[in-house]
Each structure stands twice: as structure tokens, then as C-alpha cells.
Length: 326
Image (cartoon, rainbow, N blue to C red; front, side, top):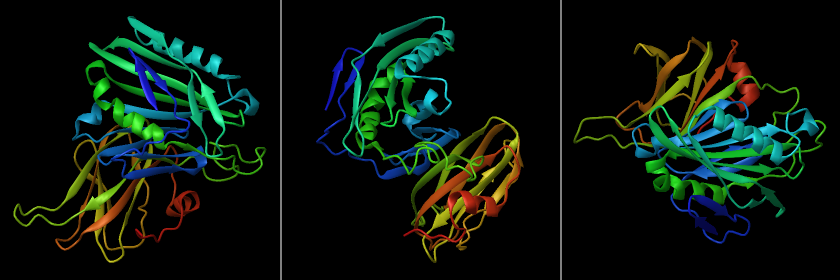
């Protein structure tokens, strides 16, 4: 059940009885401690190891909106925050420091039920501020994990003029958000953090899935998808493309100057490419049919690390090299 009071969201997610519509894809963040559904046309970005950002693809209006979930460690496992109050105070300071003209509004506590039915309660606020000549509205909420070891920071931001337009999509996504049980002994496996001793420096900058095909014979064109990939520091990039058995979906990464940097050819069950050196800038990912007769579901991933890595490192971190869509 969702109620609104002015600009404040009152979210009572525990015991939701409706089914979100139009959420065709599921993000499964096992190491992050949750799953959540998101709609077609939206992409998943990984700005950091513990942050997931959902936003509309560049060719749809929702590209102006973003919903982010960030895992923050508590002092129980060496983090900076002892409770939701101290974390919220820090977030408020960050918001105020980033804008000279800002309004903050406090809402009722956010109540979420995890996978075991436990109620998780945390604060939420709405901020409205001017930035770079535009007015933005941002919702911020904090949900503690039942172990008390991590906090989930939820943020939805859009231009104030677009906020109400995309808010229902974010609320539908929230209705599918499922926080899992702690994975094993918390001394060796903290919910929302990578397993101890496993590869953790290779992050996912972007992931998406969908369907490509059929070939448009009337227009004489292949079916393609385009994505923007922002690289903020020097490092190394690779991609993975998974398609159906016997089909042929390819992936390409183009450098900021337009040259082809990475090519993952279709019709191969080996999903990973080698890693290529990249520098800060805006890269373009293209995924498309390799042949006119190809029609297939697909998943695509963009990997990044500040240090060189191999296909064997990707296999250790993200699974076998030979995969096909079910």
C-alpha cells in the first residue's frame, strides 16, 4: 500500500497485496543480499562494488530518472555508521553541501518486510534543490538489514518536473524488492558484502537483458540495442554476451573517438571477451543480430577493474565461460 502526503512518500511495503506490472527483468544481487525487478528499457549500472543504479536507457524519457540502492557497512563490521540516524544525518549534510538552495522534508518511517517476514524500519526524507540551473527532487530512505551489519540506502532522483511521472515505476520496483537471509556465519559472510577470499575488484558497470529480432526486412535493418557506459577512471574493461543456443548475438564497445574497442562475436558459447585498457570517458555498447535469421533472448554485461584481469578471473568471479540462455 502506498499513500502520499504532499511531497512525502509514506511507503508501507510490508504485506503488499498488489502485483507490479511491466517489470520484465530481475536483478539478482546475491552478494548484495537482495533481488529486485525492473522494467524493459531500463538498464542496470554498477557505479561501485556495493551500489546498483537503475535508470532508463538513453532513448527513453526515463533516462532522466534514477533509482539507486547502496549498501553501507555499520560499525559492527568496521563501517562508519552505528544506526540509521547517524547515516541519515550524514546524507543530509551531503545534500546540503551540494546545493546552496535546498528544502528537506521528513516523512514517516519506511517499513519493509524481508524474505523471512521480519519488519525492517528506517527513516526517509524528500529533498528539493537547484543544481546546474535545474530543480531536482530526491527521495532518500534507509533500511537496516536484520543483522544490523549493513544499511540499504535507497535514492530516487529526477527533475522536479519529471518526478511524479516516473515515481510509480520506482514504487512498483520497490514492491518486488526482496531482502534475503544472512548467508552463513556472519563472521565469514556478511550479507551484502563479497565472500571472503573471493574475487571482488572486478565490478559490473552495466547489465541488461531482452530480446533481439526478427530482422526488419521492410527497412532492411538488423535489430540492435545501444547503451552509454561511463568510465570515470583509468582501468580495464571486458564484456559478456549470452544468447540462446544456435543463435548469434554480438556485442561491441566503441571508444569515445568512435573506434571499435571490443567485439564479442555471436555464435559462440564462450561468453567473455578479454580485458582492454580504457581511460575516463563515455563509451558506447552495441548489442545486435549477427545474421538476418537470428532471433534470441540475450543478456549483456560490462565488466571493469582498475587493474588488468583475465577471462579466468571473470570465470572465478561470475561463472563459467560457456553459457547459453535457458
